[in-house]
View 1: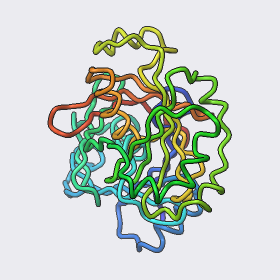
View 2: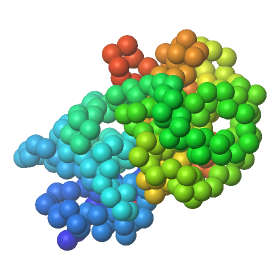
View 3: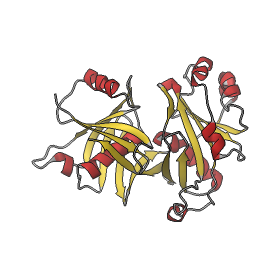
View 4: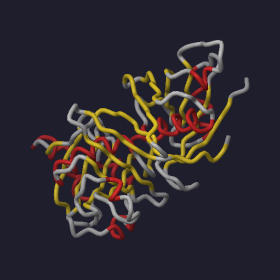
Length: 297
């Protein structure tokens, strides 16, 4: 069996930053257990498997615009992965020369769309706005909430129930340096909560960027952002995810409401780090824009 394989760093324009993913082109039927074994062998947070839906006389990787897409971690298949979707679109557009302006992916989470926008790729995802915890949820998470902020002052706790992501909004006085310096004991978190209500924790604080809906103007100063975050998901086997598309489907709606703007420039402050441009739409969806870099092919 021969497979065409790429590794791509997503949500960055620099190699060895952002979030790495493997992208595997499927031109033949491969058993599911083999897909899982290969993902384990590659040992990246996600491996994406993409296959053209329409067979044409011409090269389908160049001319097809609709594909099936699946994502596997080293241990299991997952229903959605933003950065591996961006990585897949990047491979199709930039490594294989796909001629389409827009790509459609049939996935476990429904139809996902990726389109070109200059040097960026835009992903069309459902928005997952967080809401306050109920009293029963606060009780269920009480032990976890006592330690989750690692001593930093918490301003608000919210939960996205559709994604099982807890949003911990830190006080506005929290600096980027403090957020980047956080050292969290994710193993302790797992001992305090079984993952039934929360699968991942978003730590976030407001950035230093002046409130504006003009992203082109905002990007002139590359060190300024509307919001800063880190994302931890030990319940999914990920101590810290470098840059997380799905987390920004939660962050985008929250900060859009707080700042009264629809377009945000966001920084995920993991050691690798990465940038996500978020546009919160009025139809219950968000556009996640990012760049990517091919590392291996």
